[in-house]
Amino acid sequence: MSTARNDDFGAGCGCLVAIVLAIGFLANACDSDDSSEPEVAETTASAEPTLTESAYAFKNHVGETLGEATDSVKTDDIDDIKWLKAVEKLGSPKRSWKVCFQYPVAGTPIESIYDFKAQFSAVPPRTSCPKNDDMAMVTVPKVKGKTYGQAVKLLKDAGVDTENSVATTAYMDEHGDTGKSWKVCSQEPSSSEELESDTGIFMDVVRPGDACPSGDGLHYRDPANDPDSPSYDGDDNGIPDSNENDDWGSTGSSSGGSTSSGGSGEGSYNPGGCPPGGCDNSRHCPPGGCKS
Image 1 (cartoon, helix red, strand yellow):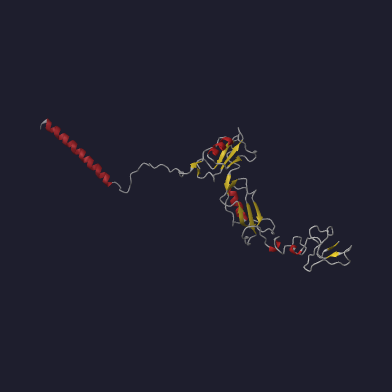
Image 2 (cartoon, rainbow, N blue to C red):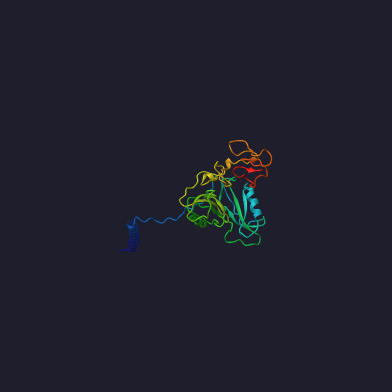
Protein backbone atom coordinates (compact mmCIF):
# COMPACT_ATOMS: atom_id res chain seq x y z
CA MET A 1 0.00 0.00 0.00
CA SER A 2 1.33 3.39 -0.93
CA THR A 3 2.10 6.17 1.47
CA ALA A 4 -0.58 8.40 -0.09
CA ARG A 5 -3.26 5.86 0.61
CA ASN A 6 -2.13 5.54 4.22
CA ASP A 7 -2.40 9.28 4.62
CA ASP A 8 -5.87 9.29 3.09
CA PHE A 9 -6.91 6.48 5.41
CA GLY A 10 -5.59 8.34 8.46
CA ALA A 11 -7.39 11.47 7.47
CA GLY A 12 -10.59 9.51 6.92
CA CYS A 13 -10.32 7.88 10.30
CA GLY A 14 -9.79 11.26 11.93
CA CYS A 15 -12.98 12.60 10.37
CA LEU A 16 -14.90 9.51 11.41
CA VAL A 17 -13.77 9.88 15.02
CA ALA A 18 -14.81 13.53 15.08
CA ILE A 19 -18.25 12.61 13.75
CA VAL A 20 -18.69 9.86 16.37
CA LEU A 21 -17.73 12.22 19.19
CA ALA A 22 -20.17 14.85 17.97
CA ILE A 23 -22.98 12.26 17.81
CA GLY A 24 -22.12 11.11 21.36
CA PHE A 25 -22.25 14.68 22.69
CA LEU A 26 -25.66 15.19 21.12
CA ALA A 27 -26.90 11.92 22.55
CA ASN A 28 -25.79 12.88 26.05
CA ALA A 29 -27.52 16.21 25.72
CA CYS A 30 -30.75 14.51 24.71
CA ASP A 31 -30.52 12.05 27.62
CA SER A 32 -30.17 14.87 30.20
CA ASP A 33 -33.02 15.76 32.59
CA ASP A 34 -35.53 17.84 30.65
CA SER A 35 -36.99 19.21 33.88
CA SER A 36 -33.91 21.27 34.72
CA GLU A 37 -33.80 24.76 33.32
CA PRO A 38 -30.49 26.36 32.42
CA GLU A 39 -29.52 29.10 34.82
CA VAL A 40 -30.06 32.54 33.43
CA ALA A 41 -28.20 35.52 34.83
CA GLU A 42 -30.44 37.93 36.67
CA THR A 43 -30.73 41.01 34.56
CA THR A 44 -33.76 42.71 36.11
CA ALA A 45 -32.74 45.69 38.21
CA SER A 46 -34.34 46.15 41.62
CA ALA A 47 -37.42 48.30 41.42
CA GLU A 48 -36.88 51.87 42.54
CA PRO A 49 -39.74 53.94 43.92
CA THR A 50 -40.96 56.21 41.21
CA LEU A 51 -42.37 59.67 41.74
CA THR A 52 -45.51 60.79 40.06
CA GLU A 53 -45.14 63.28 37.28
CA SER A 54 -46.19 66.12 39.59
CA ALA A 55 -44.06 65.04 42.59
CA TYR A 56 -40.42 65.48 43.52
CA ALA A 57 -38.30 64.09 46.32
CA PHE A 58 -37.58 65.69 49.68
CA LYS A 59 -33.85 66.39 49.89
CA ASN A 60 -31.38 65.25 52.53
CA HIS A 61 -30.62 68.08 54.97
CA VAL A 62 -28.91 66.11 57.75
CA GLY A 63 -25.61 67.79 58.61
CA GLU A 64 -26.74 71.22 57.49
CA THR A 65 -27.54 74.03 59.89
CA LEU A 66 -31.18 74.70 60.63
CA GLY A 67 -30.83 77.96 58.74
CA GLU A 68 -29.44 76.26 55.64
CA ALA A 69 -32.04 73.50 55.72
CA THR A 70 -34.87 75.96 56.22
CA ASP A 71 -33.75 78.26 53.42
CA SER A 72 -33.38 75.29 51.08
CA VAL A 73 -36.87 73.99 51.86
CA LYS A 74 -38.38 77.43 51.39
CA THR A 75 -36.95 77.59 47.87
CA ASP A 76 -39.30 74.68 47.13
CA ASP A 77 -42.20 76.85 48.35
CA ILE A 78 -42.70 74.77 51.52
CA ASP A 79 -43.57 77.02 54.44
CA ASP A 80 -44.70 74.48 57.07
CA ILE A 81 -41.31 73.98 58.77
CA LYS A 82 -40.77 73.02 62.39
CA TRP A 83 -37.57 72.98 64.42
CA LEU A 84 -37.10 70.34 67.11
CA LYS A 85 -34.35 69.71 69.65
CA ALA A 86 -32.74 66.29 69.33
CA VAL A 87 -32.03 66.16 73.07
CA GLU A 88 -34.89 66.98 75.42
CA LYS A 89 -32.81 68.92 77.96
CA LEU A 90 -31.58 71.39 75.34
CA GLY A 91 -32.99 74.86 74.95
CA SER A 92 -34.80 76.36 71.98
CA PRO A 93 -33.27 75.54 68.56
CA LYS A 94 -31.46 78.28 66.65
CA ARG A 95 -30.46 78.74 63.01
CA SER A 96 -26.87 77.77 63.80
CA TRP A 97 -27.83 74.36 65.18
CA LYS A 98 -26.89 71.23 63.22
CA VAL A 99 -29.61 69.00 61.76
CA CYS A 100 -29.37 65.44 63.11
CA PHE A 101 -32.73 64.05 62.00
CA GLN A 102 -35.36 65.10 59.52
CA TYR A 103 -39.00 64.23 59.01
CA PRO A 104 -39.87 62.94 56.56
CA VAL A 105 -36.71 61.12 55.49
CA ALA A 106 -34.82 62.05 52.35
CA GLY A 107 -36.42 60.79 49.17
CA THR A 108 -39.99 61.11 50.40
CA PRO A 109 -42.20 62.28 47.52
CA ILE A 110 -43.56 65.81 47.82
CA GLU A 111 -46.83 65.63 45.95
CA SER A 112 -48.36 68.81 47.37
CA ILE A 113 -46.43 71.71 48.85
CA TYR A 114 -49.59 72.81 50.65
CA ASP A 115 -49.92 69.59 52.65
CA PHE A 116 -46.20 68.91 53.16
CA LYS A 117 -44.67 69.38 56.61
CA ALA A 118 -40.90 69.53 57.10
CA GLN A 119 -39.38 69.00 60.55
CA PHE A 120 -35.75 69.12 61.58
CA SER A 121 -34.33 67.85 64.86
CA ALA A 122 -31.01 69.47 65.73
CA VAL A 123 -28.27 70.07 68.32
CA PRO A 124 -26.06 73.11 68.99
CA PRO A 125 -22.82 73.60 66.97
CA ARG A 126 -19.88 71.36 67.93
CA THR A 127 -22.30 68.99 69.68
CA SER A 128 -22.49 65.36 68.64
CA CYS A 129 -25.82 64.07 67.40
CA PRO A 130 -27.47 61.48 69.68
CA LYS A 131 -28.08 57.93 68.51
CA ASN A 132 -31.78 58.37 69.09
CA ASP A 133 -33.91 61.43 68.67
CA ASP A 134 -35.51 62.43 71.99
CA MET A 135 -38.07 64.43 70.03
CA ALA A 136 -38.74 61.81 67.38
CA MET A 137 -42.11 61.78 65.70
CA VAL A 138 -44.27 58.78 66.56
CA THR A 139 -47.51 57.46 65.11
CA VAL A 140 -50.47 57.39 67.47
CA PRO A 141 -52.04 53.92 67.77
CA LYS A 142 -55.78 53.29 67.94
CA VAL A 143 -56.78 52.94 71.59
CA LYS A 144 -60.48 53.81 71.29
CA GLY A 145 -62.52 50.81 72.37
CA LYS A 146 -59.65 49.30 74.37
CA THR A 147 -59.42 49.10 78.12
CA TYR A 148 -57.29 51.77 79.75
CA GLY A 149 -54.67 49.14 80.64
CA GLN A 150 -54.47 47.96 77.03
CA ALA A 151 -54.31 51.56 75.83
CA VAL A 152 -51.30 52.34 78.03
CA LYS A 153 -49.42 49.33 76.66
CA LEU A 154 -50.21 50.24 73.06
CA LEU A 155 -49.04 53.79 73.64
CA LYS A 156 -45.78 52.62 75.22
CA ASP A 157 -45.10 50.19 72.38
CA ALA A 158 -45.66 52.99 69.86
CA GLY A 159 -43.28 55.33 71.69
CA VAL A 160 -45.97 57.75 72.90
CA ASP A 161 -45.20 59.38 76.26
CA THR A 162 -47.68 57.80 78.68
CA GLU A 163 -46.56 60.10 81.50
CA ASN A 164 -48.01 63.03 79.57
CA SER A 165 -51.10 61.14 78.44
CA VAL A 166 -54.29 61.98 80.31
CA ALA A 167 -57.43 59.90 80.90
CA THR A 168 -60.54 61.66 82.19
CA THR A 169 -64.07 60.43 82.83
CA ALA A 170 -66.36 60.81 79.84
CA TYR A 171 -69.15 62.10 82.11
CA MET A 172 -68.62 65.52 83.69
CA ASP A 173 -70.45 64.58 86.90
CA GLU A 174 -68.44 61.43 87.49
CA HIS A 175 -65.18 61.48 89.40
CA GLY A 176 -62.62 58.96 90.51
CA ASP A 177 -59.33 57.40 89.57
CA THR A 178 -59.20 55.63 86.24
CA GLY A 179 -58.81 51.87 86.53
CA LYS A 180 -57.11 49.53 84.07
CA SER A 181 -60.44 47.95 83.20
CA TRP A 182 -62.13 51.26 82.29
CA LYS A 183 -63.01 51.58 78.59
CA VAL A 184 -61.60 54.27 76.29
CA CYS A 185 -64.45 56.08 74.51
CA SER A 186 -62.46 58.66 72.57
CA GLN A 187 -58.89 59.79 71.94
CA GLU A 188 -57.18 62.97 70.80
CA PRO A 189 -55.18 62.98 68.55
CA SER A 190 -56.86 60.22 66.58
CA SER A 191 -55.04 57.11 65.40
CA SER A 192 -52.45 57.31 62.59
CA GLU A 193 -51.62 60.93 63.40
CA GLU A 194 -48.01 61.84 64.20
CA LEU A 195 -46.79 63.74 67.21
CA GLU A 196 -43.56 64.31 69.11
CA SER A 197 -42.54 61.41 71.30
CA ASP A 198 -42.66 63.52 74.47
CA THR A 199 -46.27 64.51 73.79
CA GLY A 200 -49.12 62.50 75.24
CA ILE A 201 -52.72 62.01 74.16
CA PHE A 202 -56.09 62.67 75.80
CA MET A 203 -58.61 59.91 76.44
CA ASP A 204 -62.20 59.88 77.71
CA VAL A 205 -63.04 56.72 79.65
CA VAL A 206 -66.05 55.11 81.32
CA ARG A 207 -66.38 52.49 84.03
CA PRO A 208 -66.47 48.80 83.02
CA GLY A 209 -69.85 47.90 81.57
CA ASP A 210 -70.93 51.52 81.05
CA ALA A 211 -71.91 52.80 77.64
CA CYS A 212 -69.90 55.61 76.06
CA PRO A 213 -71.79 58.88 75.65
CA SER A 214 -72.99 59.65 72.14
CA GLY A 215 -72.38 62.81 70.19
CA ASP A 216 -70.09 65.75 70.83
CA GLY A 217 -70.02 68.21 73.68
CA LEU A 218 -70.19 67.75 77.45
CA HIS A 219 -72.01 64.76 78.87
CA TYR A 220 -73.60 64.12 82.27
CA ARG A 221 -74.60 60.78 83.73
CA ASP A 222 -77.46 62.52 85.58
CA PRO A 223 -79.10 65.08 83.26
CA ALA A 224 -80.05 67.15 86.29
CA ASN A 225 -76.35 67.89 86.80
CA ASP A 226 -76.20 69.73 83.50
CA PRO A 227 -76.18 73.51 84.19
CA ASP A 228 -78.48 73.92 81.19
CA SER A 229 -81.04 71.57 82.70
CA PRO A 230 -84.20 73.17 84.24
CA SER A 231 -83.72 70.93 87.29
CA TYR A 232 -80.10 71.95 87.88
CA ASP A 233 -79.45 72.95 91.52
CA GLY A 234 -76.04 74.56 91.57
CA ASP A 235 -76.06 75.57 95.24
CA ASP A 236 -77.61 72.29 96.44
CA ASN A 237 -80.29 74.10 98.44
CA GLY A 238 -83.09 71.89 97.19
CA ILE A 239 -84.47 74.49 94.78
CA PRO A 240 -83.65 74.30 91.05
CA ASP A 241 -81.75 77.37 89.94
CA SER A 242 -84.40 78.01 87.30
CA ASN A 243 -86.94 78.58 90.11
CA GLU A 244 -84.73 81.01 92.03
CA ASN A 245 -84.82 84.70 91.22
CA ASP A 246 -81.74 86.83 91.76
CA ASP A 247 -83.39 90.12 90.82
CA TRP A 248 -83.38 92.50 93.80
CA GLY A 249 -86.82 93.39 95.15
CA SER A 250 -88.66 90.89 92.97
CA THR A 251 -90.52 87.81 94.05
CA GLY A 252 -89.35 84.32 93.35
CA SER A 253 -92.81 82.82 93.34
CA SER A 254 -95.49 82.87 90.72
CA SER A 255 -97.97 84.41 93.13
CA GLY A 256 -96.56 87.87 92.37
CA GLY A 257 -95.77 91.01 94.37
CA SER A 258 -94.22 91.45 97.69
CA THR A 259 -96.17 91.64 100.91
CA SER A 260 -95.39 93.47 104.07
CA SER A 261 -96.20 92.73 107.66
CA GLY A 262 -95.40 96.12 109.04
CA GLY A 263 -95.68 98.62 106.24
CA SER A 264 -92.96 99.67 103.90
CA GLY A 265 -90.61 100.86 106.64
CA GLU A 266 -88.23 98.93 108.81
CA GLY A 267 -89.08 95.34 109.38
CA SER A 268 -90.79 94.96 106.02
CA TYR A 269 -90.62 91.41 104.72
CA ASN A 270 -90.06 90.43 101.09
CA PRO A 271 -91.02 86.80 100.54
CA GLY A 272 -89.27 86.40 97.20
CA GLY A 273 -86.58 88.96 96.55
CA CYS A 274 -83.70 90.32 98.57
CA PRO A 275 -82.82 93.99 98.94
CA PRO A 276 -79.13 94.87 98.57
CA GLY A 277 -77.19 93.83 101.65
CA GLY A 278 -80.15 91.95 103.06
CA CYS A 279 -78.74 88.42 102.58
CA ASP A 280 -75.66 86.67 103.81
CA ASN A 281 -75.74 84.32 100.83
CA SER A 282 -73.96 86.19 98.07
CA ARG A 283 -75.34 84.02 95.31
CA HIS A 284 -78.90 83.15 96.22
CA CYS A 285 -81.39 84.23 98.84
CA PRO A 286 -82.51 81.64 101.33
CA PRO A 287 -85.87 79.94 100.65
CA GLY A 288 -88.76 82.23 101.51
CA GLY A 289 -86.85 85.44 101.03
CA CYS A 290 -85.08 87.49 103.67
CA LYS A 291 -85.75 90.44 105.99
CA SER A 292 -84.26 93.81 105.25
